[in-house]
Length: 98
Image (cartoon, rainbow, N blue to C red; front, top):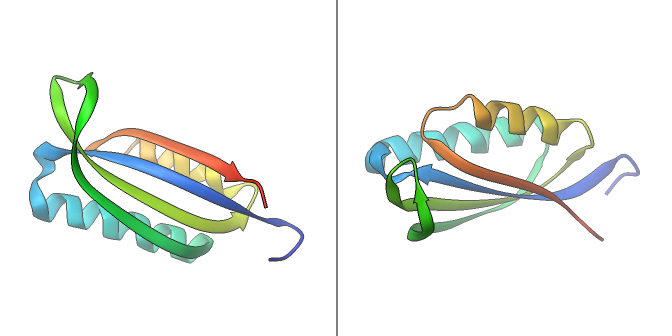
């Protein structure tokens, strides 16, 4: 890992209303986005789970965890794209201590 790169972990919760094909296409979109701007270490597909509380009248969400290494400016851009993508109901990006 170079000096300016850091490790990050990003959890994304997708709306179950997207359907199987919609969920796959959103996951692929973010895999491609992260791969083109960072080093994608792993994608952990947790699948459909019950939400702790309803979000937008939904009780289930589809969870995906990305581990990647990037420069410090990429996570804010990733968060911006999460926020403008239909079907993404919650996200979290954290820097991992090495």
